Image 1: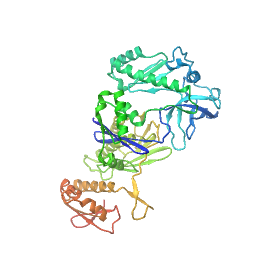
Image 2: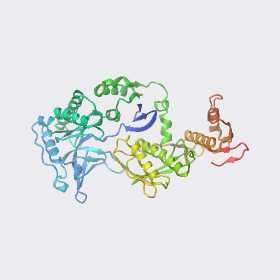
Image 3: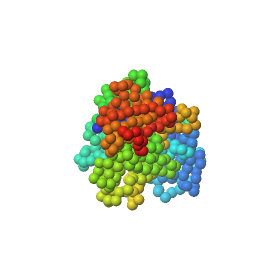
Length: 517
């Protein structure tokens, strides 16, 4: 699988597109004015304790207070609190936790009001960004993520990613990490560590220890509440987490970002430095790579799949609901049950992509087309499980219920990505909206494909608004009309009518009778 990263840097927004085999699978957006992100470490000040919820609100220096329940503050709460006091008093030994005595873990059934009081300083990590009316979610489990490992202060435990298979490799990594692990620091070995040498692991660990030393140094001079340590920007964090040998190119349209990425790659993966390309063309980078078109197709309430199947996606405060519709699906199966299975499998693959692309989290309910055979329902479940293996976010998938519903829960740490795929209607001066014009062209071709493969006709005509007519017939030899006629082996005529709506179209057969699609 070939992977590419395309980065568009604007004045107030950076957009990062991840392509797998030229298909858009992830879209990350980072507002430059955004204050806190997942992974940031903050020194907060308790502003309010809620005994009934066994939770507390913490002023973290942002617009909204952070929030955490009793166990959110971490089993090592006493050790973290002790470290915070010593570090703020300037104890240099806290940079390495040399001779630091780890305190007993937090009892699971305690009361937060016995631990905290209003005005107390706490050290915490942002585990969820602000979503809707909610402030950031806090966690007392402090950690620093590197490329090959995650450093966990106040622990002596070594954990290994479940994605690393093979007893020999797991034992090799455990022995190597045990030989270099500092006292009072636990380590989680990430999937990327598979096959790496002790020198590479040691370099990653030393970089993380330097970050911890910087945090300790900063705590001596800061005024809480404030941010103590910032997680790398979206680009650096994404490169750290997903960069593999399958990556062949990274394109970026900003010179400063280009230099920053090269410097970062020089640190974490010197062999990958040459894959960074500085995009200098006048055409916007997302348009040049067809990403803007893919975004227009993929976002919105209705998502059309090339076979004619379409998804209806609805977002609510409590959950996300996805309805699968067969549409003008080309029937190539041996019967209705077989065709329904094909429709559902195609939909499952697109749904798995949509979850990653929109970063949809929480509860997702999918209403598939009903199937009668138990083995087909099992096949569909297996397909969804396999497709979701590509998703890094933690998730759970339940088999289809007797009503044809599949329930999915997916880790939710950021607001779902929303992209406006509608444009103002030129005829109502913005009082109404219509679908984006490129999507309508795709719908016309989808209907042509359906007529060609199902109806089998050889002569059709289409009547559209003059605006769409001009777009479809522009360039006699390279026009879309001529390309479609050749592709679907038919005679195709496109006519213009000012009485048609802006994005309205009608199909007619060889006898000039309207075809109702």
